[in-house]
Length: 213
Image (cartoon, rainbow, N blue to C red; front, side, top):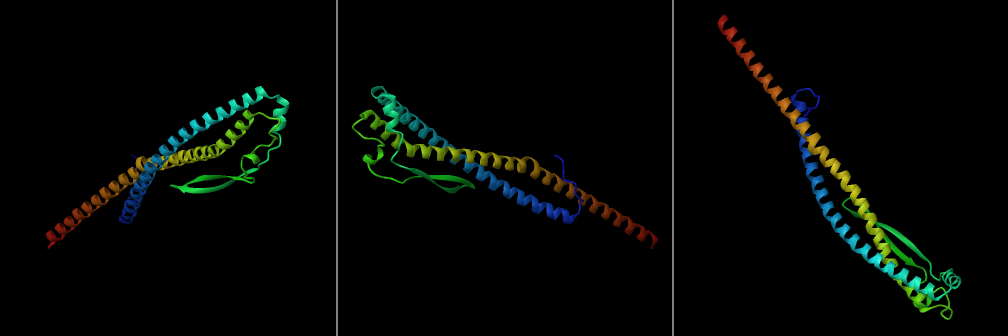
């Protein structure tokens, strides 16, 4: 492992030891964060899988209901029945911090929240009951679709944060910390050599002075 290009002085040694201690503490914190993120990510992925299966099953049933409705109604009547919805919806977006990840919170706001009578955008006399069931099934699955979108986006953001944290952990563990350790060893060895050299020179000087007296 290549060491840092610094002067082998005691001041540099003191500074490098402080940097090494900070790097090791930061590595531990980032490692703990990475482990906790992985746990939460796995839980979120499981939740995402369960939600997706539920949404796909309910959407499949809703589409089947629409196919049945189209089989018993003409295309013109069906299209005219659903052309003008009676409800308007909007999304309210907020965020929640999960281990430095700004997870989105989506809330479906219905401007007209009446009962089933207000849900149908058509008169009941000219349409089939199958279309009623299709409309209701789509309305019921809407909240789950919003939750699924929220969970999937959270999974994406957490995956990016895990990858970013992993790169930082690896940079500290395999590059920065080994370099600092190697440099501290090098400076310590150089200082020890200089100290031994100074001691030998002092002994020589003392010996020469002793011989002269």
